[in-house]
Length: 302
Image 1 (tube, helix red, strand yellow):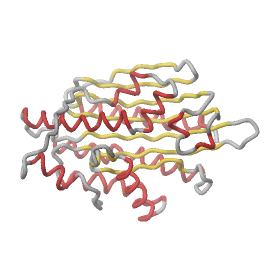
Image 2 (cartoon, rainbow, N blue to C red; image 1 turned 90 degrees about the vertical axis):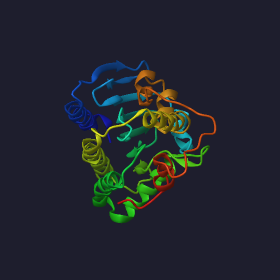
Image 3 (cartoon, rainbow, N blue to C red; image 1 turned 180 degrees about the vertical axis):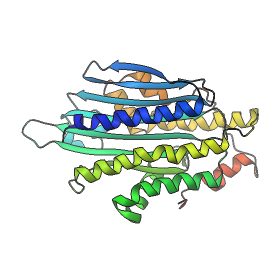
Image 4 (cartoon, rainbow, N blue to C red; image 1 turned 120 degrees about the vertical axis):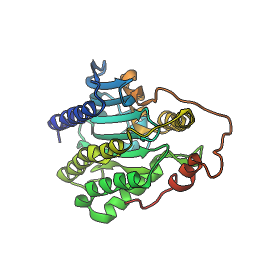
C-alpha cells in the first residue's frame, strides 16, 4: 500500500468541502501551503470572521518522519521506532450563531515502516456534532447520514460499533460528560489484518463524502435564527469543553504536536472566543439545561 496513491482523493475531498462552504458563507477561505522540516507538508484552508462561520479550517496534510510519535504508539507499542507516513483531511467549523452546531470531521491513513518487516497500514476518522441549542430533527439527520455511510461496510452491527466508539472517544473524563451528541469514530482500520485495503479505504471515503450532506442541511435550516448575548455567552462557555478535549485527549492534536507538525494548522480547530466559569450550572428548566438533560447522553438517534 502506497499512501501517495491516495493523495488525489484526499486533496479533492478538501477542495470539494471548501468550495461548498465558501458558497454557503459567501467569503473565501484563506489558503496556506506549508512544508514540514522533517518531511512532507500540507495545505491549510481557513476562514475567519466570515458571514456565517466565526472560524473554521479544512486541512490537508501529508507528512513523514523517522519515528512514530508517542500518541500513535500509546495503544500500539509494537510500532515504536518505526518510520511513518501519514495523510488526511481534518476540519472543524465554528459558526457564529449559537443555534448552529460546531462540527468536526477527519479522515486519515497511516503507514508504519521498518527494515525487514512488513509495512503496517491503517485508516481512521469520523465526524461528530457539538450543538449548543440543539433540535432533535437536526441531531437525527446528522446521525442518519452517518449511519447511511457505514451500512454498506458491515451493516447495522458496524454502524453500532463506530457510533458507540464515538460516544466513548469524545467524552471528557474529567468532566464526566460527552463533548457533544456524537456521530462516528474509527481507528486502526486494517491494522489487524481483518479488513482488506479496498474495504478500509472505501469506508473512509464514504465517511468523508458524507460530511456535506450530514452538516449543510442543518446550518441551512438554522442560519437565520435570531440569537442574543445570553445564548452567545453559553456558546462561549460550552466551547471551553471543546478546547479541553482537543488539548487533553484528541489523538490528532497530540500526534500533530508530537510529530513536529505546523502549530498554526493543528490549532486552527480552537474556537475564536471561549469562556470558563467557576462551578457554573444551568438554571433548571432552561434551554441550556435541556442540552445536558436531553442531548449530552448516548442515544440511538438514527
